[in-house]
Length: 442
Image 1 (tube, rainbow, N blue to C red):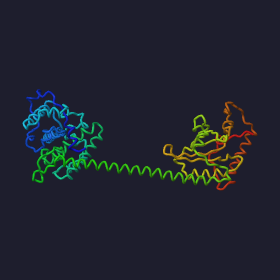
Image 2 (image 1 turned 30 degrees about the vertical axis):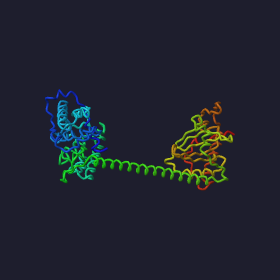
Image 3 (image 1 turned 60 degrees about the vertical axis):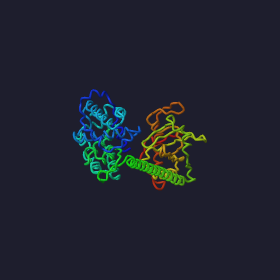
Image 4 (image 1 turned 180 degrees about the vertical axis):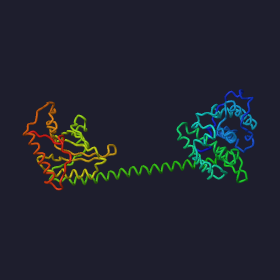
């Protein structure tokens, strides 16, 4: 919307009991109403833009009042009522319907000074304290003559930026603040003053009937003014549409590249699973079906970088599915290396890799899984510390004998020796503890 169109809402006030203000003087000199060349035909023909015209006309007086008193609005209800009476009298003398003022001014409090409007701004001093140097562009763009359409447009853009700054203060609706910007630009910034036809037409949106020969006082008719407003609005729509398409393209391109990278990663990972190792490639749906959707009921272990679920494959074999959680620090290359190395391990004291899975989607992101044979007897910790072992609902407790402890130590040592010397490159476990040693009863 433009300065011209939004001024309509700003000057929407009602006509209260005018008799109470009959003997009071309006603090605004409205004599310009009868001299300025504004287009009266809109109100004579009951045109829908009549109220905009009348309210813009009254806006000239408010801007002049701001310039002389540094107050954005009228001091009280009595002053506002007196001004409405004066305006109605002047319009009647120009053969216009007396009902225009009551019809167009339907909010009796609109012109009254209040701290609840536009971030609590009441005076120009309040304005300067809240905005500081952010009005520099407005001060420059709206200062001089605005007969040129480009100059008027620059003033409009600067006004919208200041309004956005006011709205960011977060206290009041944007409409109130926009109207304050309109009055400030016309009454304080513009050197020619609000009653000048250039200022009245561009900033306040008042439709004019004559085009003076003087370049410095040329008028911009309402249709010409609106043409630039609609042009600006169309440009904004086009810009938003283009930005939206660019953003959509980037999102889709990012998804395409991510999917291509994942497909390349999966192909490389599958190629590392050599047929003679016995490790297989699993689809995510297979593992979800096997673990009942990775339900909490199937959870059998949790560590620093993953959780383990018990699952049953379609062929009836029972497996332990480890889901890698620390994917931010554990990159795809590290996961691939881990799969390739573990899949080559073949030793009676080391648990072989049954297979792996890598999946990625827009909702859940990257998912990485390692699949091992399920060890039903739990870990060494369950037996070493006389802890309950659950197996089919039964509980089994017993102490480990000293010969059993000796055999465990020897088996662990044999497994470590194989990792250190029996495979190239050597593997260093770095996390030997009772929970990582699975128990096999003999």
